[in-house]
Amino acid sequence: MGSLVPIRSTLKSPDLRSMPQGLAGLPGMTGMATKMLKHQIADLDVPEVPEFLQMLSDMGANLWACQMSVDMMGLNSDDLLDEVADVINVGEFMELSEGAQIVFV
View 1 (cartoon, helix red, strand yellow):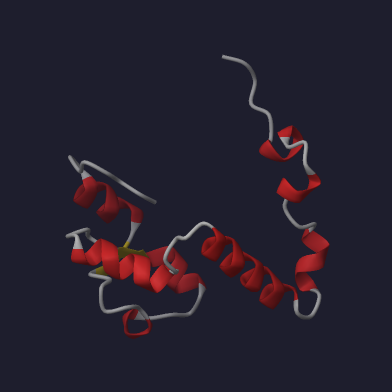
View 2 (cartoon, helix red, strand yellow):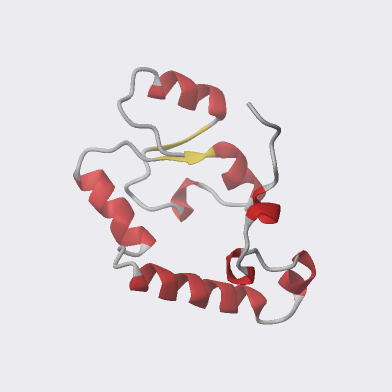
């Protein structure tokens, strides 16, 4: 195998590169990024995240929240969608997903 090359340096189109880190702190950038992502999702005819998670739950998928992410964001289980079964750490996830047909992280 060849050496690993950062994805950023392999993209030819400037449109496909991520926003420079310094811009993230400017007022309105988070809202602009959210709006842009919502437009991209709509253009792809993909359901928005809450609807998509509901569809997965309805099909029998298990939904768990990441303990580290919940801690870092200062959330608790009451802040999560009802479809989220539990808040688990990586070790618990590895145990629960053993033998799973599909694992999406």
